Image (cartoon, rainbow, N blue to C red):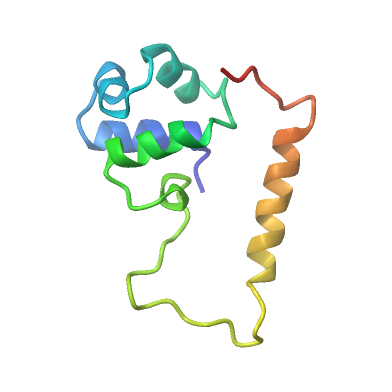
Length: 108
């Protein structure tokens, strides 16, 4: 799975957009797009993610992060009656890595 910065760059190029074009579509600054793609910002604000979802034509924030999104009506209920624990554990580990001082970047 690609890191968020690589995924944003990949989606932007697939749309044929420059960083400036993506910034305009997402209603964010060019500097923000640059810092996201350079990996300097790893935990962008929720509103930034929503703008990128719209601007890049993906259906959800999960898809922006490169996670598989089941087609409408195709989702299966968990067999055990609980959430997908490996997926939750992976997300928790990712969130914990973002919160450690060594991986923190300046957010604006």
